[in-house]
Image 1 (cartoon, rainbow, N blue to C red):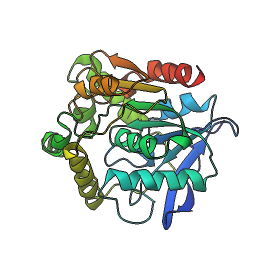
Image 2 (image 1 turned 60 degrees about the horizontal axis):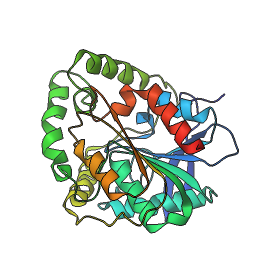
Image 3 (image 1 turned 60 degrees about the vertical axis):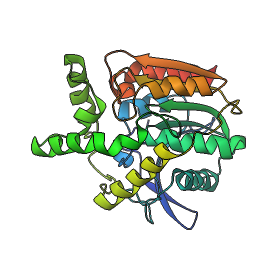
Length: 277
């Protein structure tokens, strides 16, 4: 079976540019579309989650415009990322999909479900929050010091941004970062400072945006987070459950923003059960 380590990087034309993506898993079934966090390329999708989901269903990881090998400039609005993603889904020929959005990806997923509910079957929102949610406009001020700490200690900043400082958190961070290095060939182009800054403006705008009415979303939604998320504070997950009419909430103990990576086995099992239900 093709895995996240060797799935070929492909491209598709949509919305006036070229987007890169990777697809693996069976050829039939409702595909699961993966949308990732601020600054993430195709190589930042957790291989354990990708491979775990791909055992039973098609899985497609997509880059946003201006990210990695995708063309164009990174959009300054979440709504533009959502329209790009819809264009890619349609260009790939999918009529109905399940969406998994982590962090920034969760913002994009919410916008897609609001604007194009006909495309969506089920939704998973991880480590994310609603427009105007608590602390979202402060992602930059919270993140920059920890990113600088990573630079000064020659450490991937995701160790500090995504995981707690506990023994469990540090162990999970080490394992996660090692998994991201497993793919040796055909890696995506690295993130650029310009892309990071443009995406941060989109995140800041989402955090200052008036709250959206999510009460009309009837799609089943699974919300997951760690109990100590700092980038998108964990109370936003509770807020999403309050706003959405058909939701289930999972909070992982002793886990941070990357709670789904720390608890990847439990998360995959939960998502499979959720999409199969």
